[in-house]
Image (cartoon, rainbow, N blue to C red; front, side):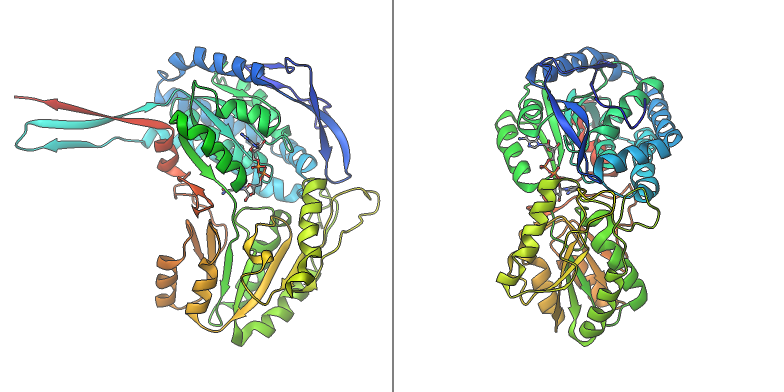
Length: 485
Ligand code: NAD
């Protein structure tokens, strides 16, 4: 199999197969704007077949020893690592991200997800409670849920796909999964790696297709007991509406509009380096990017000059070129959406300090390239600060007091993450307590320890992934109370 493969297939019951309808969707290479493959436009019939395969596999998989499950997950991790370069190139072609980024971050992290949960399941213990005086002891069984649905977005394709699948499988569930139709390639390639690692047929089924058809069929299938979803807030709302009356367990990781709060007492050079990354890594298409930058007034002008100079030096280019700091945006509609925010900036009394234009890369003129853009805003209440753009666009504005900074950071519907740059311990503790976000980074960004709870507050989601939180989500705790005499 090569990354030039034209058509990808569904992975059901350990086999690769075409969609039953015979319908296909175009798959674009964002670096040149051309169709380079076809993906199945799966229907309810394909999802049904995947559910049947899972149902058949579940009794055996859920009774497989923890050691055996762990061993298979670790082998999948090895299989991903063995194909690191191949997978990184495939991810880059599908998504437009620099190969260097996929090689350093996306694919190693996908392997780590399997390795981490392969180990974590061996340590997933249950509590026992002795009720002294009642001669009873309670303990908790943690049963796999059965068949679960995992649905992921396009920005970190294999990284987020495996972040759900690995804990679901580790906990003894069978999975029906759907990657984004915009970036399906590495999920397709994962099927072969799972077969090579000895994952039994039907334990993981990967069905490709559109959200409102294939995804919807997964969410509303009565035999699928839980949905782990990462994607946009509007989609999350729709999924919650479908799944809630069926009493499905739901984990929703949704949009963000994260504040990056910079105080004058910070370690300036480290802050500057990291802020360039936290603004534009992956073309700004990471749910954790700090898209609203608030800077203490006393260093605002210096920051503005230095930051803009650093951003202007970033190179936008073909994802395969080593020097490219930014590759292409994921799709034409997404590029147009991001551009529409930039074009609207002047209606909002905002000033584009850097970027704002499409980039034409010679030889790839139809690619979806955009300059990293810095926009100075006058108020946190503008559209640029309130809506998720999810591209290489950040806003900057000054603040005078801690109270003002905190109020602006929290004055948004989202609550995924925040970054704080300060060396003041009291401020660190106060902000850590009062920021309405699921994650607070202090003097760093996107340092991930996979044991920590990951997720957002407010419209950024419900529930937490990561560590034992994910294993708890994918299991049903059952209390057993025994009285003895
Ligand atoms: P999206 O919501 O459009 O799609 C995500 C996935 O859901 C895709 O696989 C899609 O096919 C599927 N889907 C769409 N409609 C569906 C439906 N009705 N039923 C079931 N599935 C459906 O999101 P996207 O554009 O792929 O990703 C970008 C969004 O993801 C951004 O908002 C970003 O913030 C968010 N995101 C959040 C996190 C997080 O951890 N909180 C991480 C990455 C991305």
